[in-house]
Every structure is written in structure tokens, then in C-alpha cells.
Image (cartoon, rainbow, N blue to C red):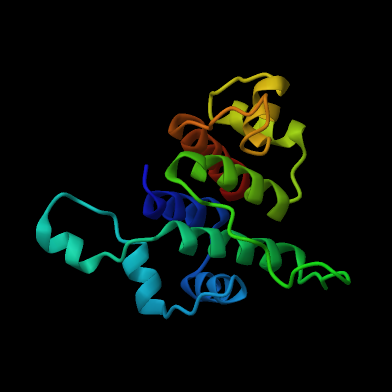
Length: 165
């Protein structure tokens, strides 16, 4: 699963319009147009002609979108004295993209661990609280566990079931 797939699934699950997507990117610090959003949301095929119509969603763009989603859903937070203005880039490698996705969606939608387990259960995946906790931990923690595409895909599927039903 690449970042474009993640963006497409998240947009579908949360029922976001093109205008909302542009606004969310802007809140995250990335200027995109509606045309750019349509290119980001184009499904990729292995066909060369199709790939020219698609814009690749980089890790930095996805990170900015997720930060913008938090602001869009929860409102802008004023930084405390001594705190940096904006959040530091959290998606450094392709290995932790799914972990960051789950964490930031959890924050944006104000979900609890129980809510996340319920969403995964709706999609047909049963995991323990400990497994979920390991996926939500900071990379480098002794109990950190990378989130596989299967869990991220099913979490987004469960979100679609919950928010579009």
C-alpha cells in the first residue's frame, strides 16, 4: 500500500470533499489545488499513460495532510511558550507510515483504544489491547511493533464502515 492508497482510503472513510481535502492540506502547510488533489486520488496502474495523470503522495505530503486533519477536526492549538511552532516531521521512513497514520487519525477523531479495537473488529480483525498499544508506541521503544499494511487497510475499512453507514 502506498501513500496515495492511504490517502484515497482515508478520504473515502471520512467522506471528505475535494474542497475539504485542499483545506486540510493547507492547514498542514502544503498548498495544493483541486486538480492536484484529483491527481493524488487517481488510482495507479502499471500502465505508463495512467501514471502520468497521477501525482505521487510523498511521506512529507501525507504527514502534512494528517497534521492538517488533526487541525481540521479538533481546531488549531496555540503553542505554549518554548514549544516549537509546528509539529516536527514524523514520517521519516516507509516502515513507520502506517503507525503514524493510525496515531494521527486516532488523535484527529478523538478515538480511544477501545474505539480503535471496535473499528478493527468491524473490519473483521481481532487484536489485543497489547498489540494495539505496541503499534501506537513511539519508534525505538522496546515494545514498539511496526504496523503492517493489513492492519492499516482494515482500520481504514472499519472507519468507512463506522463513518459512512
